[in-house]
Image (cartoon, rainbow, N blue to C red; front, side, top):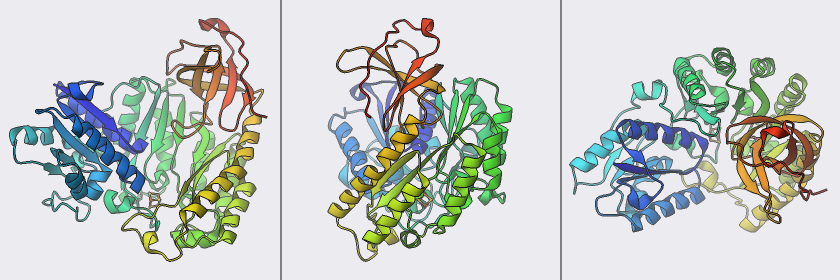
Length: 477
Ligand code: SF4
């Protein structure tokens, strides 16, 4: 039997997909790259924003169009949990639905589908409130599966996500996640540590710590601020094969002095922090139901930079939130210029049905959102460029991700990431003239060029590589 699994959305979904894959492989399913060749087609969907929902439905429709008679098609993940009825209405060829935190029941679901042809679709949900398809109560999560180490496949590229909790306790007015992921549920520390160890055994040189809010880890278990202890334990229990531990999704209200101290004192924890702030004006932040005391953020940043002078700080902002006046938007621009983040991601506000923000008065027209998005990026780009230029002349370790080629000349181009770049969301270090270095290799490069998002470097140990040449790369000023 063969399966074809498509993962959409964020790294948290990718971790669940890894678990699904391992269960399928354990049951003698083999992966296939070709959907038409698969006996089981699974789409692990994203339902965070309307755009993500449409993308997920589109993928389900696409593979449904080519579905063969005996193929089984399963929709899994957040969209299913949030809008199961709509998935069924719009993609009637779905045989089974698998909600969040129930991915570990994929084999049981497949068995039900195969054994009960004609009585479809079959559904399994974590019941976090009412689902919209009226499934019978499956009450709470299957504790044993969620609380033990998630089985993970080999890590070919040297980097793996490690999910430490699910759900979120924050009240952000624009966010749908708590409505379908539920409240924070932290995985037991031992389970996370076991998984970290097995990922290192499987080839991980980098562990990227993810959750809806990594910094709230442990609160639901009566041990708030447990993240520093968890990070220390990961560093202490793993051997030198693990080089980088990277922290994503820190909530500003939960960043503690202990966390800063632990980050600064363990060499495996990279000086990098992703702290989504969503806005930089207290009035907008209050309407967002987010921490609005900017002094707290300034304080965190000062401590982080004092403890780790080379730290790379990433954040994300929403522009065009309901009621965002020109003065509030200017407040955001001033904040961005004052802090000088290394990396900034931005999104125009998307009113998500069911959230308080969707019904707020003074919705901002799309054209204004787009214009503000462009202005924000225009302010940030020279800052990012300056930060990157400050890296020129330094030696940085990079984790090789793959290779490409320079468009004009066809010369090989090695693509890697330094500690300053998280996978998928940040930039790259480009190493021209070098090819055929396996993904997952770590090597030291001398940085000799900088662009707004990417750096350019040359390897220190040239003889290791097969085709090193000096190639001119056009750099922006
Ligand atoms: S902290 Fe993040 S996941 Fe939690 S409610 Fe706010 S935006 Fe959503």
